[in-house]
Image (cartoon, rainbow, N blue to C red):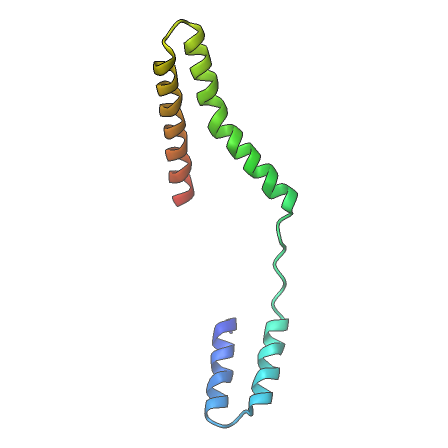
Length: 99
């Protein structure tokens, strides 16, 4: 029986007066104790993932802008190219996260 249904059944028994409040609480706690604890992701891993994401989003536009600027294209156009590439990367990442 799924966890929610078990607790709902206990709640009905308590509402009908078959279980006392103490019995209900003890039974509910016993059910919840059977649920395994979810592992928390390592903090270092989250920071590393954020850094990788930041580099993946910012490095390509910065490199493209620098290369285009080095080829003699005016700075404003190079910056516009970089921002456009950044926007495309962010839109693609957002669409991936939506599924």
